Image 1 (cartoon, rainbow, N blue to C red):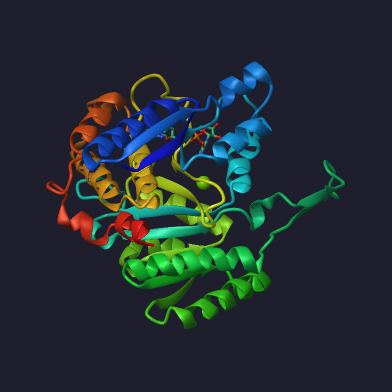
Image 2 (image 1 turned 180 degrees about the horizontal axis):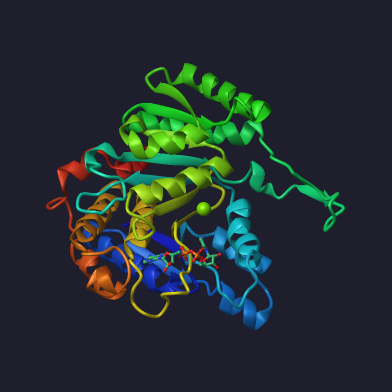
Length: 372
Ligand code: NAI
Ligand code: MG
């Protein structure tokens, strides 16, 4: 029997509440699909930082590195200056563990309310593959004459052929395993240097993946097409900044933060990938049982898919989707059940083979991810 060794980082606020339900779903899948799970909890986050003054020590980073995958809740606490945990822990883990791709599926499940009028769920099923370590987010730049009318701020964007090529190659492989369409999203008419590099690397890969149809959409136009014509997209590949923006739009289209899942993928096998809901620690509802755990469970499904457990991943997705479709509201007291009760309901529905809706199975990101 294969046993997967997972690191569990619950984090702060609703992070522990939803991540516990994700681990519950993983355990249910393990017993039903015949694999083992071994988990180690790492108490990282605001509480540990406030107590010790340390975000993460080098030994802990090395321990994390040894696991097969990391399940992460969320971080952020009103008592900690914004940015300290985000840059010092979350972005640092993504960088040091070489998690080059941030993957966010945008799928509207049947019965889930969307703000887009009359959007049929069948029309909305695509994936954003975002470069996760470069672009505007490397933090390079400088400020001179700060605080005066002569202040000048330079914010650099780093774009390396190697990182773009790794991410683009992953996106092409994913597109080939899905519906065979890849769309580059950039702003190459204005950001000519970075845009040309991205486009030329996509063109090189297009020659090798001649079964994949290639398209290009500017980032601003993307914000119109995604809500109005989501069926146009299968795999969207984009840089760090545009990916951050358009994937939040994607989360809104698919029903919001209670649904949106993500994966930070290490592509070269040198370190584990990390799976987390898109939402943060939601201090406004922490401790109330009002957090929807579905986004965390769907992130756990991505974890199983990346470990090659496609069937189990699909079962998690199916269970989460069917419970989501029944909830009267996606967040807060209106959900009609607590975080834990929803987690229990999802775990009970994780079954092998029987009960997996064929509609979800056919085009699921889980199947494609597990296959590549
Ligand atoms: P947030 O995502 O935590 O919350 C935004 C709103 O959505 C809140 O009203 C919250 O109650 C609601 N919400 C979020 N997740 C929900 C869920 N699963 N079920 C029901 N409702 C949910 O974003 P916010 O408030 O801007 O940030 C709070 C903290 O989280 C900050 O410290 C921020 O830096 C941090 N953060 C951390 C992230 C991470 O750990 N990767 C990502 C985003 C924010
Ligand atoms: Mg964001």
